[in-house]
Length: 239
Image 1 (cartoon, rainbow, N blue to C red):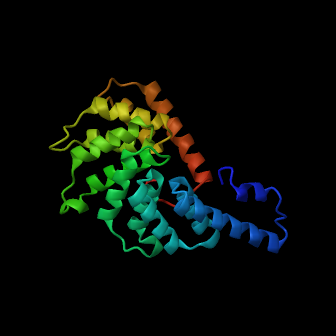
Image 2: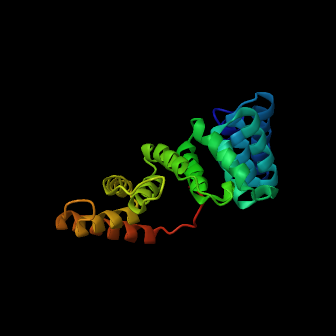
Image 3: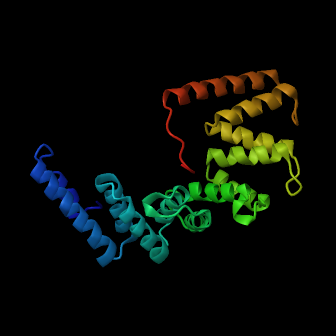
């Protein structure tokens, strides 16, 4: 809590005492509800969602709070999380990519901790095409990937590099841009971007051959792969 009573109380709670813990959690819930619905604090609503998800495992109620906070307050991080709920059908919501897209779009357009991730997800759904009779909007996808890449989001930089590497009727093949975005994604820790850039330097594909750079990038890809294998986590949409 941001300087709330529950935060102060936490320093006084004996977490080995079940009664004290139960009282602390009850006070925390009351405070979150008050901040959200009485003080009309969207950050308080988001903390309430954290409580409902993390403590109560009540995802249906969390979904209701997210809808309220996104629709009424246009709270960026709430819209982002609500979008993820719509993608997976979490919290009793029917899976709905159109609703998810609209939520990600709101989150992208308004500053928040997950704004960059949201812009990336907008790009993913535009590129996917299922929202438009299976007709991908590659120009729009490129534009949102660019926004996320400008915010140093590695997957968006990598997706941009592959778009320019492959080319399409709307986005001509451009090896210099493909390399530019591959290198940026690689610098941000994207293993496949490092591998692609290595291959381009090795073959002289759109760039002068450079065995030294190719080897260096290949070694970086191997190192990143080892590091990722040590901390394998489940896939998550746009995380």
